[in-house]
Image 1: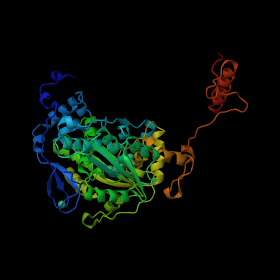
Image 2: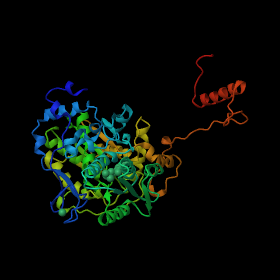
Image 3: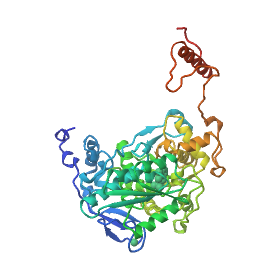
Image 4: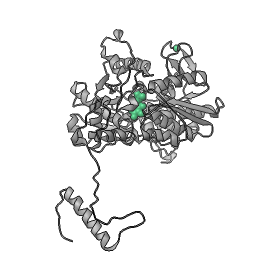
Length: 502
Ligand SMILES: *Cc1c(COP(=O)(O)O)cnc(C)c1O
Ligand SMILES: [Zn+2]
């Protein structure tokens, strides 16, 4: 749509101008720091930071009904910078001019209703929001679009040059970081640190393909994180893990999209999200809170964080019902098919604690819950979902397993509608499906193969039959025999009956 075709009340707000007053806020000492330098932890007390807009009141000056119209009409504006997470510019990164925005196709991922078979199986209506349909095939692209747009902005303003971006990763962060950094060549380079043999071959191929420096080290993600923290406190590097508060801002777009796709009514919605380093649940809570404070949504949805038994520090923390008695204890992780969430000491834990309190207080009742699931449930749920037309990876399976548990525990009822975060695309983790099918998952995963979920290709190659070979196609009678023999064999295996004779 051309600018003059938009309604008059919306037109002045369609193309956002830089605004707002963003600062880093320490969650420990409440200290405040300017955003012109790259900070990851508080220089005074070492605690994690959030980014705050001290001029959020300017957002509240626009009435909520007009905001909804602005955001809905903005979807029809064909400017790349407004096509992804910066559709929500005023909420995600108001200080950025649009020409600093990096857009690689992230965000606005589809919300797909579960089919009737699945809904009946689970007992409540639900959708998957397919964040595996982002450019690097996971939700991490939302946060990287924000973090790299911000770095781009700093470079353009002359606050930074020749950036080396680094991250620790369970696979998807590095895939995304390397992709967005590669787009900013030549003045941004990236280096990623991965736990050796604990990312899938598909995930490993991504930063390699993007030209990042890739380092594999012994240990698990938490060990990689320690090295990246060491590097970022002693060398001039830009840290791209979700410790970087700009990542969180970008990932808030997930909540804004859910609000928008349900016409800003999320009263009876339940958002289910797997937790690893806890950046995503942080962003989801923070995003809904912003829309709630602006009046764009009138009620907060329910949010359920899910963890595997093999990596469950957040779940354990909230097991203690008395907030005063809760104590955070990192756990030693065990192998998990939800490998991207295999994290024992989540960096964003202080953010989660802070936001869960604010969320429940704003709602006036408990709206955030934590659920634990088994590795078996994760694997089975992934396979069942995909047998019903979805493309979820093991973490999407974890979301589904969490919903089933939540329904069983009475946390979710039939009158509610769930939205499950499908955090990455199935093919990134296809090795787990393969090992499940071939019964080669190591015993420590505690997953048993259910024969009814197994699938395998059937080779049809009758003995003595002339078959096509490279550079030597069949023709004439040989081709006829080949087609007929193989077709008949397949038809027999499929129990097909002939309808007519040609
Ligand atoms: C990173 C990741 C998670 C965990 O998200 P956190 O923000 O670390 O809690 C879950 N699923 C997938 C596919 C991921 O890549
Ligand atoms: Zn501090």
